[in-house]
Amino acid sequence: MKLKLLLLMSLLFFVEISFAQNYVTYSSKTGILTTNSGVEGSLDIVISCYGNSSNPVILNQYFLCGDTDGFVSNLASNGLSLIPGQTTTLKFKFKKTVTSDTQKVYKFTTNGSCFQNESEMIKITVNYKSGSTTNPTNPTNPTNPTPEWNKIVKDQTINEGGSAELLVGADAKNNFKGYDSVTYQWKSSTTSTVDYQMKPIPGATSKDYNPGILNETTYFKRYVIVRLNNNGVSGVDGTTPSNTITVTVIPSPAIQNNTITLNGNIVSGSLPTGGTGKYKYVWWYGDGAGVEGFGLPGDGQDLELPSWMNSEEYKKINAAVGLYISRSVVSGIKSISSNVLKVPILPAIGNNTITLNGNTIYGSLPTGGTGKYKYVWWYGDGAGVEGFMLPGDGQNLELPSWIHSEEYEKINASVGLYISRYVKSGVESGSNILKIPLLNGNRLLPNGISNQNYFSGEEMIVYPNPTSESVNFATNFSSDKDIEIVLYSEKLGNQKSVFKGKVIPNQVVSWKIPSNYQKGIYFYKIISDNKEAKSGKIIFN
Image 1: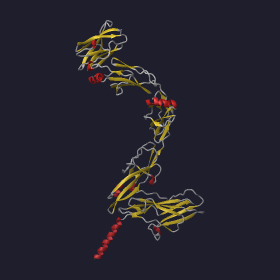
Image 2 (image 1 turned 30 degrees about the vertical axis):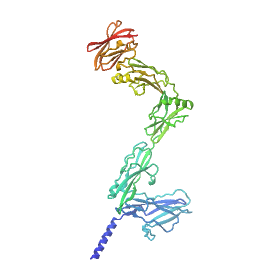
Image 3 (image 1 turned 180 degrees about the vertical axis):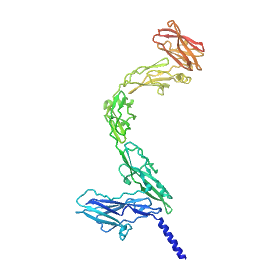
Image 4 (image 1 turned 120 degrees about the horizontal axis):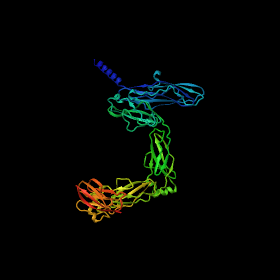
């Protein structure tokens, strides 16, 4: 009875082991190859491993049994040790020189013994053709079958510069439950579908992959990497490639219409045609017509030449060998260079002076440069006039009211506030420097204002006086006030209101004297809170 029980337990153990074992299948055990005399031909047979055991299947060497004449080699692409989900490709190579058509049959053992049943062997029939040296044909060469759990979809066709659709892969992890880990790695190539020539895509380790914008035909594969637990020792890896997905990219037409013209200091570029329809611009300059030597800042369709190109240093280079400029247009994988232009040598900017009249700074009309001028106004303390930029880009400037605030008046009284104008026109020029007059700080009066125009209490200053163009009424109220400024003289015949409204503390009201007013003495009065606050006279000459 004990013997029967022992035999029964042994049988059950054998059945359990047999059910847990892995197995392999062959894409085919027969093949026909036709190759020409003296030309090497090859035939592939794919071996796939299936099962649910963590133990790898160790394949035997595939020995040739019989006549070896014409046989070159048989190599396994992924070795002879397979785990479930892995494949290996046996590549059989043959080469024989014949004087007449010859057929040979080669037999390879699959269990390591040439006494194996012939039906279990791999049998390859090779037809050697005489009189031709063209490449062999292999119409019966089988394709590498992809397991369902590692298939990806789908082939696509897009235009150059277009976005490919999401590549969706089967969920391989469901096939390897209980394993240490199952990870993915996507690879791509623009030249080959052979595994070792495909390059990993950084960060592409998810089940699916979005290729994004493509500019040339690209091949994609997904590799499933399985880490097993082999008898308690982790670290046995298996890697299985998916089928190949091809994203075919239809090339865009060549880029055309890339010309540039110079107008003053602006290089205008045409709008290109062709390519993907989306363009990137790169501007280049060089000396002696070597225009691809250095990149210029700016990536727009047009370009404003930088002012340093007309510095003294570059003017010398330009005068000696010339400075040249061109534009490159890139669209997808295509690019084109424009015509080449010589950078002109611009005359220096002249006549850049400023003068102060009341609260307005008048600037002269410059000369030189390109003839088109941009104005930038700067102010600073201690004659550091490039410290801060003032609002305003006109030829003249009205000083902002905050420049006479208590805070800035203190700075002005201590180290001075100064102002200047920069003119840009291909080249740059800085004007003379003016000191901003004090209105309230330390009770110092602007130049040209006599004591008779200085009032205590609710202070008001009227300047310049005498004047030839305009007059400023500077207030020093501690709060907002409604005021009216009235002007009159014998020549006017009646009073004229030149301002009526609310003023804020330290506001300066400027009034330009009309051109039809006769020169002479005019009287003013300032009305606040319905009473005359201040009065005086203005000399217009």
